[in-house]
Image (cartoon, rainbow, N blue to C red; front, side, top):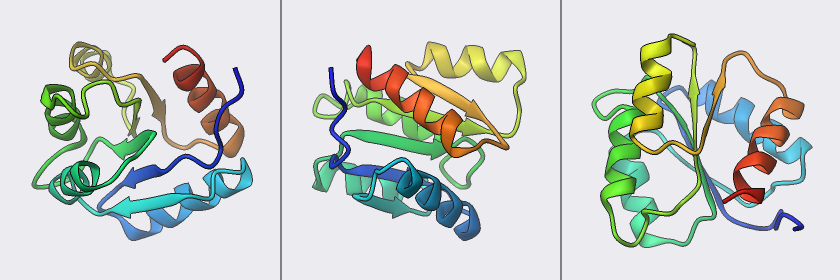
Length: 128
C-alpha cells in the first residue's frame, strides 16, 4: 500500500526548535503538509477542528503531556483510530509500557534522523 505523502501531519512539541527539526525531517521524506501545535491542549483543538492522518508528539510537555494527549485522542470517538507516534528522550521501560497501554502506534527515541522517522511512519501507516 502506497503511503499518502500529502496527508496532514500534526507535530506537537513545546520546544520551537524541535518543531522546526521535525518539520525539516518530514520534508526530507516528502511529507510537506505539516501543521504544528506547541502543547497538548492546542494539539487536541487542532485535531478536532481539522483532518489529520498522523500525529507526531513529544512526550515531555507541560501542562498537557504527550501521554495525556494520546489518552485524550484515544478516548475521542472521532480521533480514536488516528495513528500516533510519540517522541521521547527516555527509553525507560515504564514509559514504553505506559505509551503502549494508552494505545500509541509507535514511538521514537531522541535523537533520530529522517530515515528512522520514515521507517516508523511506514510501520504505522502500513499496518494501521
